[in-house]
Image (cartoon, rainbow, N blue to C red; front, side, top):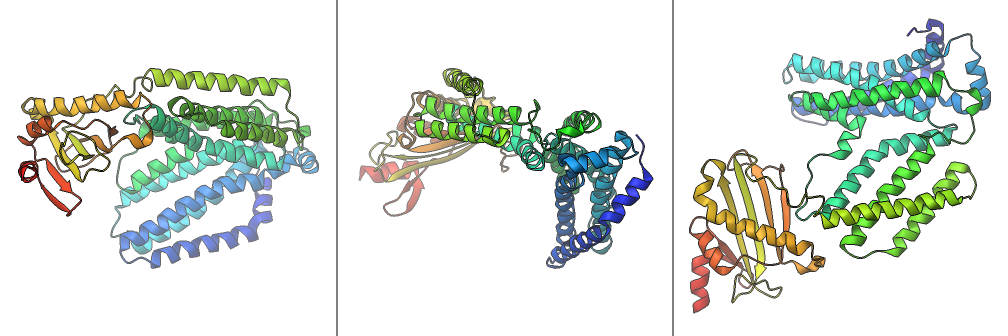
Length: 477
């Protein structure tokens, strides 16, 4: 694609005062954040992080400013009648926006590195960060501009850009709600919010490179896919855009129809999970339907919900509840049962339950004794601890079974956490599960565990902690 030099000069001249003003503000803020730190590395990182996030914010703001004319009838007619091809016009605008984001970032980063970073950050890491960030900014400019152009007026463009940017957050909330209500122990095999967010993918990689880690190529490739889709969207919504779209309803298939449907489906699925696992809240359904009607009012600029809209809402309600029901009956689509033992070098169990003073294997809300044990099992020698792990796994499976009996949230008396670790004294969030314990490990089994791992008992009456054997002897007196 080609650039129009006269048009670029016009854009620079038109925005020159504002550009200089904001550059001075950004530079001043970066230096201020740096000098408030003590260590050179902290000083460098403070300014570098500010430069990154300020540039990312610009990649959202500048497309709104530069392409606002497409949403105004007079401005659209004037700009689209310029003796300039749409391709050149689009390329020049994108180049202008990208240049501002990149130049601001580069100048601030170079100053940060020259003043604070030369002695604490290897030049290769600095250069790698610069290259990756500049590429990321170009991708974000393309993606955000494409989202903004989905609308046919200024308000709709802003709403749709914000809505699509927030969809990854909504997906993460939906995933977390499903995990909390439908999966005994919880199970997060991947971060769906991150995978759906171009800005999240790119910033995550930039942070990794700044910390000396390697680039996550899978995430970069996924961000490139989003960028390719955005380029196609720019072609459809700018190069092939009809000028008469300005100030019209944003009724494109990827505009309000998709956004409203996606948000309604996710929220209905969250409500469905809660209704299946606990009790339905009809007030929340009513509130959601009212919001659904309001969303259509914003979309069509009048209070109108046709039968097709009501049928769509009803269909989503039935579909999401059916999915939630299947999820419940299959133990969270088998996520609760599919746990890989010894996925790493060690497995760590942490068990803490409030029990009866007279029987440590009986749960008691008024009991004063708390059984506490932390067990780390080595993969290399797991056969030696097979009996202990069988006891713990039986407790875990029993907790899963009780979870799907729809036990109320206050019916549990403690918890057992399970996770992997690459080293004995290292903790990890990988393969992590959290179980509510309603049926504690029996006293006999605790004594079996105590032969290989220490079991401690906390007595809240005097605040003392003692070994299992000592507690049992004290109880006999």
